[in-house]
Length: 301
Length: 301
Picture 1: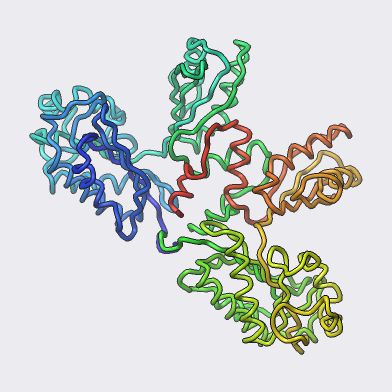
Picture 2 (picture 1 turned 60 degrees about the vertical axis):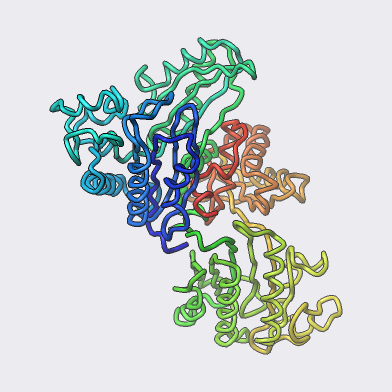
């Protein structure tokens, strides 16, 4: 327990969602390894994609991630890949996320170490993205990935899309990869007591960053047909700066304009405890509360 | 990290709050030991008492606790002890608290193993208390301790106060000890925007169990003189059954009768993350949320 002084998370996305044998080989380097814990992996046949969630002590995590990338580069041929999800490489994107006892700067440094190694060891061109990006226009994954595997053959020759590490040519089968550091994402949805999608969409537009809303908030309206309600589907991109409760209360405030009640909310996937403890602290009006008072935080120190 | 499958907490209270050298020797068995983590210890000179908070894998924790008890029995002479806090032994009380991956039944079993060992190895009479008690009238620590070290010389001869383990005579210098299992306590106070102590006292009487209030709630009114306000000081004795937010909202409801606002609240000492996450879940109206979605819970699995 006390052997992990730092906990880093990594959520690599691989372009293989159908062949269970290959998936097993890609995930293998994360199993039964000291200093690494595989939390989850899920493959989607339609997307033809595998998403792995793993945490670990940074050095051990780095080795395991490099090993898994090596396996994926060997097993996956993008020339034969099709699926609903956009992709530019056998290993499409590798984000590192600081969880406990380590800083964003350490996550950035780790992502660059891994990037350099992937470039030289596997001859796969690497684009640093998000907080690790070498220029602001390279922060956004969608901007880097535009054109996908097929378009990358030419795109990589444009001066502004020179990779940060590795060869200046697309890998013939493994394409290219984006590696970087980012904050934990929290997928958080707020449900509304109406079946009018346009209301959820309107509210989403008001609360999200690009619409003049909260700085670390992406949102869109979604219909939950079987329940006959709609939902403001939110991606909280930095819960330490834009708190969960703030998004929730803002949705409630905007919903008033339509006379529509908030009927509940939901968290999809994993959430760091601090996001919820901060929310409890707000509603209870806690004075002088520190995360050091949380028993589990102390145990994990 | 993944080596601790079960986490048990122990909060032993020792009757030494002044001699730092002795305190250091008592705490030593909890330091730098595999499977055990010392979270906190604090000594109070007025109380002449030392409270240690330690967590560990059950077997390792048991050994460390037994070792520390041995040191305390050797170093502390109750005949020479005075302090504000009631006490009946060199080691006054030893509660075991299940935290993660273990049940109350396992905590009870562990407390009995430790009790038996203390009785035979150190010849100190042991009373099992709280969830480990051998009869309902022996659940309450205050009832067992009544008469303290001095009175215990006679009290122990009464048939109803026969110890559960160890000799039927008070240990000449170390007295007697209470050992048992209990839920985590959360010390939680709600602050009111008034300087009228009787209002905090009235509200405390209404929300606590003995006054017809919440089942797992003890409470009293307290004056915060320097701030010019009063406080409902609460002990949540089982936050899994009586949620924190329920006590908070009930204080707010009762305060309305006096036209007094709730101005904040505070948690004293440590709190299990579940107590606060459950509170966040209530205020956000989370649907289908599971503690398994909390990243740290998954890491500690």
